[in-house]
Length: 210
Ligand SMILES: Nc1nc2c(c(=O)[nH]1)N[C@H]1C(S)=C(S)[C@@H](COP(=O)(O)O)O[C@H]1N2
Ligand SMILES: [Mo]
Image (tube, rainbow, N blue to C red; front, top):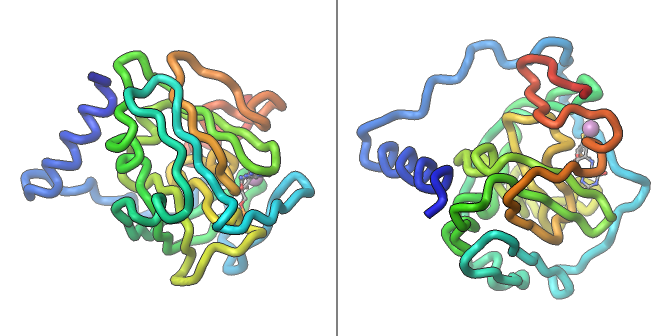
């Protein structure tokens, strides 16, 4: 049994049963050093892979009981979650109230069952990008593998068919064009983390660079 996974399920159950409510969010919406924008800038490595849903696969493995490779149909057959969250890019723009639909990371964890040894998660994308996060960060209920943005299919430039959204971290922690999710028993740095970006990436403490 994985303790981070059990703790996340306990929080979820307490909220569903009405014995706990999600903590009230700070009234301050724009983290220090950020400016609000109303457009949605595009940031990538110069490659925008065109993956048709029919070709798309999401491989999930590593320190889990039941590794799986999902095709598009199997991915959409999983429980779907809607969430509205704010988006903070380290290059100092923030966009508020982004509405996403997708599969929660928690639902993926339900499917593959992380082993007790799993402490970190490594994300790999179709453009060669990668990023990493602690497992407990990924198990927050607002973490989604999103395929829909503001009611429409996620456009290719923003990571369609599907991307990771981790609202409480700077946006580079959310991989666009997600291809592989690996549960690990140690931390491995991703693309920007190897190039001087913070490994923890908390917008509220301006935790931008390592
Ligand atoms: N696969 C992939 N995911 C990625 C990136 C990338 O280059 N490739 N850039 C990251 C960075 S630095 C940011 S700020 C956000 C940007 O998302 P957007 O282009 O939809 O605004 O995606 C993140 N995820
Ligand atoms: Mo970024």
